[in-house]
Length: 168
Image 1 (cartoon, rainbow, N blue to C red):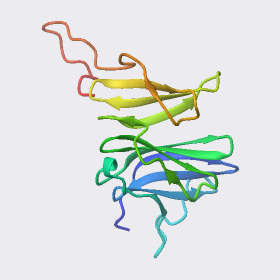
Image 2: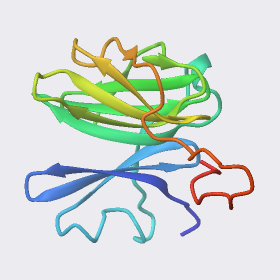
Image 3: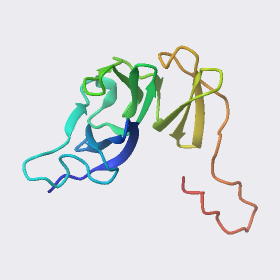
């Protein structure tokens, strides 16, 4: 009852939903068969299973911003740490194997990944400048940052009111 869950990421799984979220700096996983009631949430003595904890030096003390993508027979779980964006892979959706280094290093976070018609992967992620993009042609192992900002704060005209998106 004292757990706080943030940064939810849902993944369709047959007739149900798998939900990844952050709790106490770790990424946990729970399941729902109706899309509303998740196992372990609110049930006495039960809690979602921890699937990733910060144990690599680049991750820092806490993980954030999970994003799950089913690709062929794998579940790819992207997440943010203190030194970049990491990737963990799973064949069963329960046990994940993390890459030992970030797939995208730096002050980046909140990854969202999708497959392009070509089969390549594209990632949108946050930086201090706004949203940026990276691409991977090898299933997510290596990424190339594209130049420029995809979406950022609007430019201000002298004397104009600050736009709604100037903070981030």
